[in-house]
Length: 261
Image 1 (cartoon, helix red, strand yellow):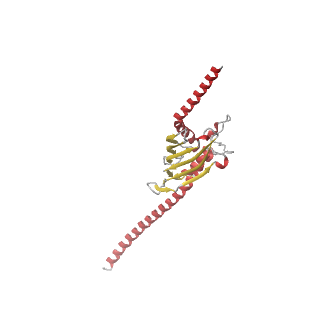
Image 2 (tube, rainbow, N blue to C red):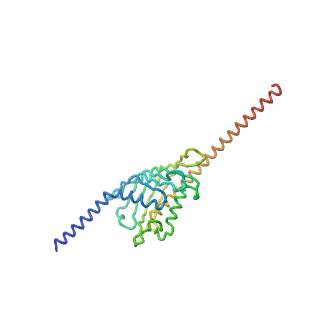
Image 3 (cartoon, rainbow, N blue to C red):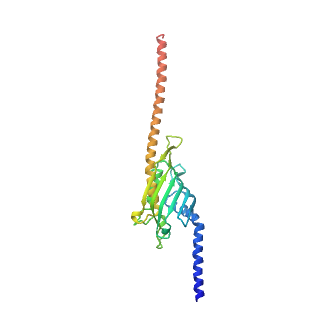
């Protein structure tokens, strides 16, 4: 009996160690696969991740080159290209229903703002897509595509203590200019995401972040478009004035000829 118990303990240890080893070796590929599989269900666009490098032991690491495609109906290929993303996770929370992220820092994102469409812009359309896929949310439970857990399982939630977006650039796509207008995105900081309601679903976090980016990008785009309109109006006035001067100058020469001057 003693040998049997020792054998069972040894088998359990092997399984646990083997499981941890598998998770350690495959953690980053699992993160990549998870993002690329589930995020598009909410955004209704293509989503790709260049790579992940997160330590299972420290909970720290980063993601690189996360690209969110443009919604249908917009000509630009992508809405977001989020350069480097540094993350620090409370490892004690990883196995719980609510994962606590101490910090999430997005550095140097490239954002494309394209006015028009039914929603008003490509970013507003992304927000609308997220609202549609999270409709029917109750108590933080998403009614979106990931709610395929009808077998009693529940979706993981997250709390993000501090999220920052720095050194961002906005490219404003407009028919008024052949090239997109480039502008700097103001620094964005959001604290306590999901803290007051015991956690937020991934889709709810995405909606909140994209909504804030949309607000900031809309202001930047508005200023850029106003400047472009003023420049176009000034150029139009210059051309009209040149034409008037040309016509007036020609008439003056004819009048001089008539009076012999």
